[in-house]
Structures are given as structure tokens and as C-alpha cells.
Image (tube, rainbow, N blue to C red; front, side, top):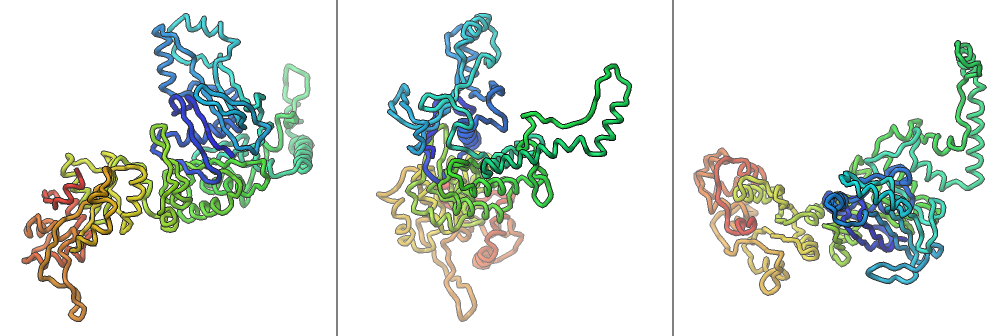
Length: 548
């Protein structure tokens, strides 16, 4: 397995970046440009020599390099400031299962001693140093002179590598990016090759050659070749259609995988991803596909099929190491928040000690990633609370929705404490908006870990500190109970007028208790009308505290 990856100057990585990985499942989350795809592509590149379906040798481009690194290099060069040509370095530090890759490894910062690993460096080739320096001396350089670069692909044992010499393989499953060549999916071909034994591959190759050889013997082809030969021409040499019998024309690059008689590249992308993942997971040969890289599995897949895919991943990964990038709370919850790695400005945060992991795995619909990825969050119980908080925020911020300021208002049901555990670990700024329900002592006991002497600098519990009573009772005669005056709706009415809410709701109630009953029975509808109203409303103090 890969224990650590080190990346320098590759794509969105500016400078050095290191990430420790665990055996089994690793889930990469983060905002756009956080580096999730970069990490997956770097691992696959170092293990296969392939970048986006093409061999990296012969396909070097400036756009592999970090944009800011390139920009600074060009500015320095053109301003006469001496500077080294930028390079890309990817190193994978492996466990002791790969002694063939073991060697002494040293860096400027630390000494590893003997360690197994693979490195791939894209850097200026020293044999072109004079030509490079002559070009730089001319000035007005507008791009990296990539023609003077070379790739050094090596093991820590200081031996050069090829795809065949690497004992650890990677399978990159990207739903949004198809890697087809001659109508055949390269990944599927590679999986098939891994499954087949040598003698089986030989049989397939021989059968394929026979098919090619009989092509020209077909009566239709013979007729066409006769017609071509009869066309007047300057040369008297025989012209005919045939097939390439050379080494470049091989069965694994030409055969097409079919599903129910439909070519693989014509089926839906979601189904492609599921099939690729199933094949990778079911490959029992330890030396093949031991690292599975999956890019946003939630794309193009229905909720039910996604659930099946994730269940299959959890059940069947066995000795495989899996890295998954995702924007889906469902994916991260289902695969276990303890496997989560949050990427933020080239820093990483883990969730190894969460007590609520099992809860979120079983109840996977909660928007945990909205909390994990936001700048600030306001937690509420339900839809009506969320609508009122949204409107209150807009009224205090020139009509901007909270999300426009990277503030998430999240309905969490009764699971406040489970979300607060995540917030506490990540030190996210969070405010909880909750009713006191007429029992402040019970509320303070529930949140005793976050109030008083236990108050956290990033977490505030917002509630009304008064208890209100009245004479209203609700329910049928035989089951009447006192109305709760200590929830959001009656507290909103308390700071506004009966007439104001009658106007907003299109009603004409003569007493507040009548309106109390209506608002209780139509909580979400009333909240939606307040949210959409052009009338300015007032808010209880604890709501105001929450949006500051």
C-alpha cells in the first residue's frame, strides 16, 4: 500500500505537499481546486506513466505545472532574476511489501533510511543545459521550454522503471472522463489483461490474427479490391484493402467490450463507472490494481445504484487501497467519516476520533459535507427555522443569501450534538439556533459541553433565555395540552404585531392565540410567506445573535 505521497509543483499544488494515507478507504473532500483530482492523477501517473489516457512520455505540456510556479518563473527570467527551471516531483512511499523498490531515501528536510518507493520527476534535462541557457539569454520567454525537459521514472532502489516493472498497479475510474482508443476502453482492456493468464492471452492473440488474415479473403473484400486494382493509375503496383498485421495492431487495443450487445462506450457513464469498479474490486490477483482511484462516484449514478456501488466498495475492497474524491455527503457518510481527509489550502484534516461516525453511516442523508466545507454554519432544527434564518440574514446583509458569504444554514433535525462534534474537531465557526421549549435547565444540560465554563470559542448556542406562558390550550377535549409559547413561531409573533402577520399570511385573525394555532399548524407555509414577503419583520434577540 501507499503510506505517503509527496507532490511538488504538479497542477494545483504550489510548492511541496505531503499526504499520509491509510490502508483501505481514503476519502478526499474539499472545495474546488483543493487538490482532490490532482492527488488521484499524481498517484496514477507515478504508478502507470499515464496522464488522462495518454503516456506522459511524448505528451509533456506546460499545463502540468502549477500555474503560479510557472508565472513566477517567467516573471523572474524576463526580469533578469536568476532562477531554476521549475520541476514536477511525485513520490510514493510504500510499505514493506515491495522490497524490490527499496533503497536509501534522503531529502533536504529528513532522512528516511531504507524505504520502498516510486518517484517520477519532470525536470530540465542537463544535456540540453547549454541550449536552454542560450534561449534564456535571448529573453522574452513566454512559456516553459518544455522541449528541453525529460522524465525520470525511478524506484528508491535507484533503478529506472517501466509500467511492467512496477509491482503495484493502479486503476483510475473517472466517470466524467472517457479514455477510449480505437473504440475500446483502455481501462477495460487492462483489466482483461490482468485477469487472463499468459497462455489465455496467447490464444486470444492467435484468434485475433486469424480474423485479420481472413479479412482479405472475404468475397466482398475481394470484389472491392478487384475494383480498386482496375482503376487507372500511374503505378502498376497492386492496390488493395487489408488490415494492419504489425505489432501496433493488437487485440487489446482493437477489441470492443460489449454489454447486452451494446459497445461499452455507448452505455451510460454511470453504468461504465459501476462496471469498472466491480471489475477492479473483483480482481483477485494481488499484484494487479491494488490501488483503486475513483473520481466523484456520485456523478451520473442514481441514488439507488450509488448506494449499491458504495456497499460493494465497503464489502469487497479487501486488501485493495482505495482513494475516492467526492462532493457528496452521502458518499462520505456511507463510507465512514473516519476515512475522511479534508483538503484546504494544501493542509489536511482527519476525522479519526468521531464518535458519530456509525450514526452518519447508518443515517447517510445528513449534509455533513456542507458543514465540513463551509466558512461558517448556522444549525437549525427544520425547514421553517431555516427559512426564517435565511430571511433574517438577508435583511442584515443587503439582501445577500447566506451561501453567498460562504455561510451555510443547515437543518439537522435533532442531531445538533453530532454536528457539533464535527465542528469542534474542525474548529468551524458554528451557531446553534434552538428553542428552549420552556425548560431552560434541560436545554443547558443538553449543551453543557458548549456553554458556561465549557464554552468553545468557535461554537455558540443561541436560545431565548426567558420562559413565556399563556392560557392557550390545543388538542381535542379529552387530550388537551398547554400551548408552547417558547418556540420560534410564537416568539416571532411576540416581536411583531398581529396585524403585520395577518397581512403577510392573508388572514384576519382577531386574537394572537388564533394566529398561534394557525402558525403551529402551518409552520413551513408561514415561514415561506415571511421569507418571500416584501414587508419588513422583526426578529427575536437570539435570532439576531445567530446571524452576527
